[in-house]
Picture 1 (cartoon, helix red, strand yellow):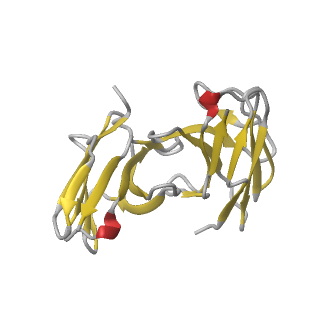
Picture 2: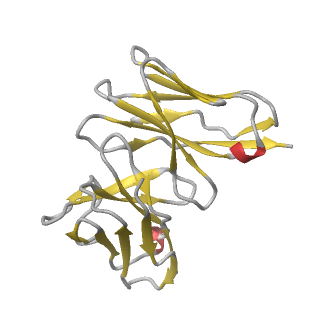
Length: 112
Length: 109
């Protein structure tokens, strides 16, 4: 299984600011995903990070709010833009084929 | 109707008990099924895949009923360390994973 790290592990931010979360994998992977887990909720897929092309966003998520970069097969970033308290959540990246996914440790974001 | 539904829980059981979780899914085209475990403040981790023939891994048994679009997870001889949230996950080939809301289990001494 892949080893996945995320930075930062947690942050407290002021509303109106932006935060960029990094996801690093120890091996090249084709599929990389970004999820959100709001307090007490399950995981919701934000987007699929595609290497060399624009990310594929799920319904309810837009590029202006959650821009994603995927410069190579081991790294991706997710930016949470113009944050509001409703963005307080855990953000997780995951990698894997369609029959199995491995998750990073998550980034716990609190927006004041 | 949500795409994946689970018993709401929480389940509070004594050590040594047997506990079963249920999950239903709405997309009949779903092809892959999994149980993930998520400890408090941790990321989800794959517990086991679920096959049509059913599969067992130690104290854990998973079953799939495609006709009823139903998945189950049975835990025998519960341990304190089994306390976690159990997530039912479903996907179709080429599609994304869909996570259920999770069922929280607390195993009590």
